[in-house]
Each structure stands twice: as C-alpha cells, then as structure tokens.
Length: 212
Image (cartoon, rainbow, N blue to C red; front, side, top):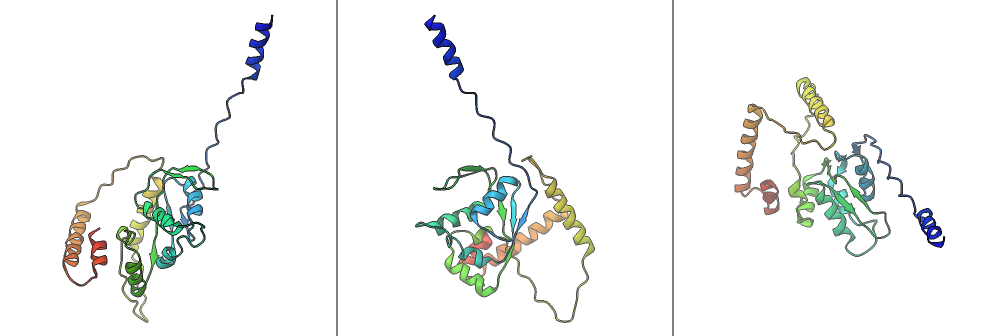
C-alpha cells in the first residue's frame, strides 16, 4: 500500500554518516627558521609537543608582525599570537577567508640573538609583556686567537635533555625532578636576580623583565 511505499522510500533517502576525518600525520619537524602565523599553525597541527622557531634577530620578528596581513589591528592580533606561545594549550584558529581548525597546542620557543642597542628599541616599543616572557642571556665577548675546547660533560647532558624532551609524547603529564645541586643553583640565581631588580642599573622595563 501507499504507506509502506512512503516508509521504504524514506529509509532509502537517509544519507549515510560522513566518514571520520583522517588524523593529521606527525612529521617530526621541531625546528624552523622562518615564522609566519599560518606557517606556525600548519607545523603545530603536526607537532603537538611544540615548535622551536630560530631567529637571528628578535627585533626582525617583532617588527614583522602584521606586515603581510590586511586589516586594521593585524599587528596587534599577530603579537597576541606570539604572547600565547608562552602558555601553550589548544587554540581555535578562526580567521575570515581561512580554514577554521583547532591547533592542539599553540606552543613555541624563540631562541634569537640581538644587540644592546636593538634590545633598547624593543624595550621602548614593546610594553605588551613579550620581553618579560623571555629568558635573557648575556654572552661574553669572544677572545681573539683563543679557541675553547668543547665541554664534553656539558654536551653529554645537553644530548640527554634533548632525548628526554623528545620522549615526552601524547600529552602525558611528566614530573621533572631536580637534583639538590640544581635546586641550590636555582636559589643562587634567584638571589642574584633579586639584587638586580632592587638596583638602579637597569631601566624599569628591564627590571620588570627580571621580575618575571
């Protein structure tokens, strides 16, 4: 009868569920020497453990924010992405005219060099907390004519730390336990930083960075 006919046709009209989205392949790339927000997004989709973005000059990274993006406030928006690298965590990528995805872990580190004059420019032009999120190291000037022998023990520890970091996968919670010697070194370092913060050797922005 007609009722059976209509019922059977409704069953045939039901669309099958869409196939599950394929998993994003892990490509094992942890280091890049160029940075754009879109490039970092694509790499971090494949590297939930984070990314290492190397830059010869940190001022060039900061000065390039919003340079190739259209729209008012592009520089501030991209600067916000840099600041979010510090904390990491899932980040919903929602931009007009671009695909929408959720980056599993928006986490990256920026090893970079600079000079004292460039550092002063950064301090004057960026009071958004970027510098306060960095670990500043003052390298000693090279001595002409003297080549230092590599520290074999330091190199071995470096390779061990890199191997341990590489082994941290799948978002597992890892507890890092420091030796008593490491804790003592940290306390000495903390005391030195407190003295520098209390002194008048640095401009307020630098003291704020040290406090961070």
